[in-house]
Length: 336
View 1: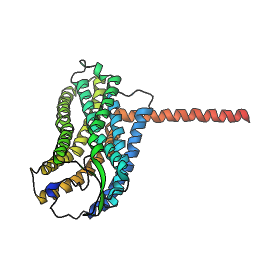
View 2: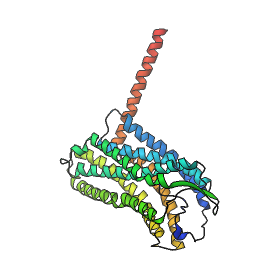
View 3: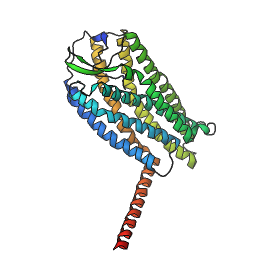
View 4: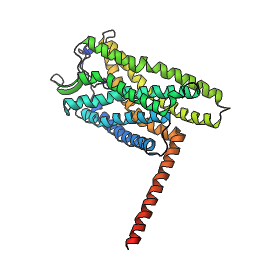
């Protein structure tokens, strides 16, 4: 979400509009951001520990979900900076380097998250709709390579954030902003249009198609599923919940950003519309942040296999602790 900014100064279409009272943001946003940051860090670290420290190797779907948890962890780790930014009435106190780095990290989270979900939806599609046709693509090595390519794509798509983010003082509003400063409207429309293409136009149809096919197959197989198929269905239920949660949390924000893009291109005009768009963007931005906390909750509530891993991991730790204590006491008895 490196392109989502507070009080972006590039919107010349509504530059003449009167300033709206945004005092509520200085109180609500810092508290909300810190709560989301604390919960998100705790929950996603827990998820990564379960996936990474368990003695059994991760399945393909779990490889994608663990990378999604890593992307969510990156996002929530950046939220304290935005909490301070909002608390200081949108005066950025951390300098230009952190302005670019924090926004680069947030931006990568958005792009990586949606393409991890693309990969996991394709994996569920191949597992249930064409279970025998694409076994090579559903190997852990292929999944890890796919995740590596997604991280590289996220970094590539975040280059505009790295180039055009800057810190500047605006005397008119008496604030030092960390914002996107495109050199001209053409570059802005090109960058924003390209990112909209990669965030909505390409991934959403793929996710929707795979999800529709998977749900159709699940309905047909519900009464005659073997144990193997039941295992795939349990994993798929969790994936579908994560997909739906992501779409609910993120799609409204991106739709608002499309409207904002049309306003910047002066295809839509009006102070009232500008005020509505700005307010919606503020609210929907922080709804989108909540997705990084929601995913780990879904793993626990709906992830039967995930809960099984948690129990096995705790037993594994309990056994190791017991062995260590026995060794410790046996050493003491020998020395005494």
